[in-house]
Length: 198
Image (tube, rainbow, N blue to C red; front, side, top):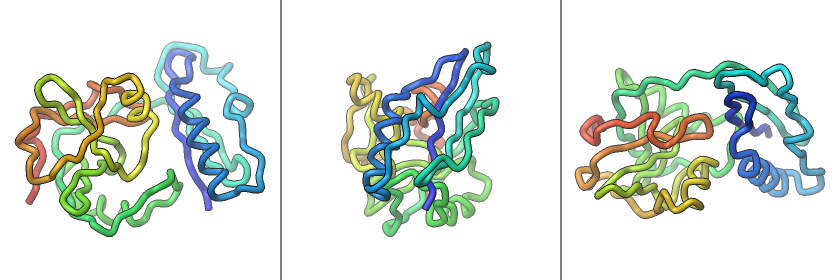
């Protein structure tokens, strides 16, 4: 079983490495408890990337590092989101393969992204955790599919508040923001009416 970490590298600086290290350590303890925990600082060499620009450090690992690729990254343009009901869906760890999520993503049609609803409550988008704004405060689903590093950092800073968010009551919010390890709060923001629930 393989897992993946995608780490932001901007102008020679690795972002939220401690959060990635914690998730990697928790994953190895859970799935490979007899194996030594990898130290990300020891395996990532960014000497060739100490320059201007945004890069993604993608590490695939199991009991050892399977691959490490550093590549230029461009933030996606997202204009429309479709809500998908998926009560059975589960993604507790950052698995390399995620067929159960991919099946729903392939049904998105002309929409740019999907937003999973589980038993009537929002969880995550396919590639992102989500934040929704109301009265100048950002909220995030209390029970996401995956506890992302950006989400965790923003909660620790008090910028995001976790709460149950009903898919039926999206009109109580003003905007939705998509966040992940590569995408900061505020970089992908859509009006709430950009979300389709049909």
